[in-house]
Amino acid sequence: MTAPRPLSLLTNRVDICGPLYLASGGMVHVLRSIPQPAAIGDLVRRAYGLDVRECRLLRSFVNDVYDLTGADGRFVLKVYHAGGWSTDEVAWEFDLVSHLAASGISVARVVPLTSGSLVGEFDAPEGIRPFGLTEYVDGDKPRPPLNDELYHAYGALLARLHRATEDFRTTHSRRAFGLELTLDEPLAQVLPELANQPEDQALVKELGGLARQRMTELAALGLDWGIRHGDVTLDNVHLTGEGLTIHDFDLAAVGWRAGDLTSCLSTAFADAFAAGYRSVRTIGSADLSALPWLRVIESIGNLRFHLVDKPAWRGTESLSEGWAEQILTDFRSSARDLLECG
Image 1 (cartoon, rainbow, N blue to C red):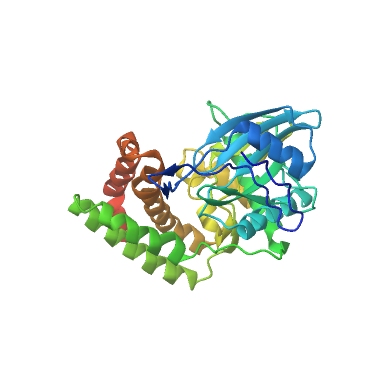
Image 2 (cartoon, rainbow, N blue to C red):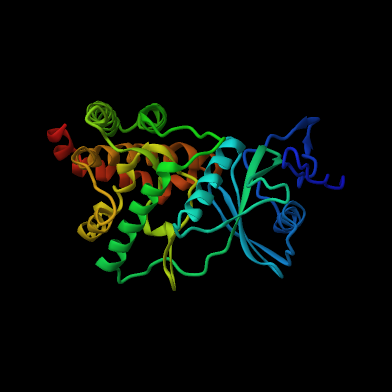
């Protein structure tokens, strides 16, 4: 195997991959690969100048996440999948996280490469994969029994995050989460997958159309538009000795900020979460009216993930996990109220 070439300080690109295997004289095309922990440890040593003594694969799902430890401390490297966010878009995300940290928001601090850049990339068999490193944050995900105090703190943290993004500036760009990206594209991919379920197909199509109509109307009334986290659930916070730390910004983008409220305002602790948010920042009446339609849009996006995206790289057996059916069940149970308020 050819020795890995050194990191380029101009492109922040490093080679950790060997040659692809050949079959019948042709190249085997790869949908997704999982870099070996030893190769990732070597990448971090060279790209960041850190003493890495142990590297473990922490999670492999949409992206691959590695836990690294050594004399310099403990870190987390996220390797983004090929064909998703570009390297420039990931750089936008890491600039955002750095800005939030500087603004006093509790996040995992970004570690720059030796070149000074916050994001690098390497060639994988399936294409270019961006990566970025953060410090490890001690703490655990909140566990039951949950309470109002936790959700009040989470609401206040999210409001401070939204407020802190107002003066965020970067030379990098990221696609905005408007209706074309979040509704039109997923809906076009989901409907053919429901061809054998015509009633569900018709219902999803109708609710998707109503969601587009209502969001267009509400946007004209002044929906809160700006940078949103994109995945505000208890899965994406750690409870530390100093309070809550929020992480996983890989769905952050400019969009309707009310989308960050939908999950927690659907729980039994909605009042506490809303009170926490309002202790820092207001929630407009148009934003509250948009919540059910933002939930429809999110559900259609989740259907695309479970019916189209995930089976492509985890196999059709993943369809038996029941996630898509649960979303459709929720659609059926809420259809009457949604259609009446539409």
